[in-house]
Image (cartoon, rainbow, N blue to C red):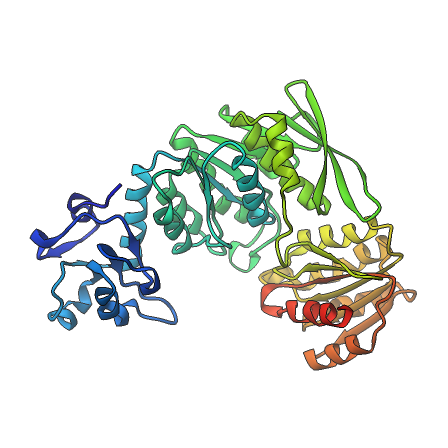
Length: 461
């Protein structure tokens, strides 16, 4: 499979210099570390870098043609390979990815949601690998650069390509969805995330639903979380859908039947009058929801129950995402990758379900991108913490000061500690004996809560 000269001519506003020397390419890259012979190098301008500075290096490593900004042409008259100038190299990169996607025989599954999209993607990839040659986006490559990167990295032998789509501004998903042209789309859920720019839950749905629209335009199938009222209502008239959930009538129905002593979930699944049960090797009700979403896709793609069970048995914890680690006399739940009100609630509820450790401790940091709702959502955690009988609460961050005040108003039995700086919290952690405790560490990405999780890990080792 190749990118041809005709494909290059079709790039928006492209001008090709020395086209007679252009050779079809099978690798498109923005990173000189991945360049091979006969590659096409696209010089992307980023917030912290300019790909044009690496053009000579790319050519020395084998790039047979380069895509540059037309404003930079005068700087590269010494180049002896075909030059393609475009008004916007990032847009050209997306267009090249769309070309590559159109040539792929693989079915494309696109996933988005306020919570669980990366975890669901990872779970689904494991399940579908039981039947198909499956590829997926690495880490959370889910933006206007990451989605094209994943598509352009897909091999011709790929049978299923799973993409993740992220956003925090309007129209970001519309852009990446048009590049991906999905055959199938899944929204895990709609919560209160990225409200700083998406305003409210309706804004979140409007942005995320662009993925569903792009799929339906292509005569694809969407997977609907029936437990989400906003998703259910807005997809009510869609016929090409598969519903899943724990409530009401669904095509794929889940039920949590219990928990193991250490808190792992027992999940019962019903599909087309067939029932089966699995014990999940990953933790939390939120992960049970992610697994059920993945099962809905797997069942639709005709995996057998045996294949689904085999895939589930191979699931691994993802670092920083409800990752549970047991030590001799304590348990650490590292959920430090990110945080919003829904994921914070899911993590705290998980603690209550772990019976083998009586003392429940949380170390939590600010939840970002909640806009004008930030104070309200931080205060609301007080009721959740009290209801789930958390024993010890350690907080850090300006926004968490609101929770500190609220907890002190409504409850005096909880051991409450608020820290204004990281050094103070680290010193406090060093003094604590965590024996017999299950400890949750969580906060938004910018809070770098993984440092505290690592400190506890080292302390317990």
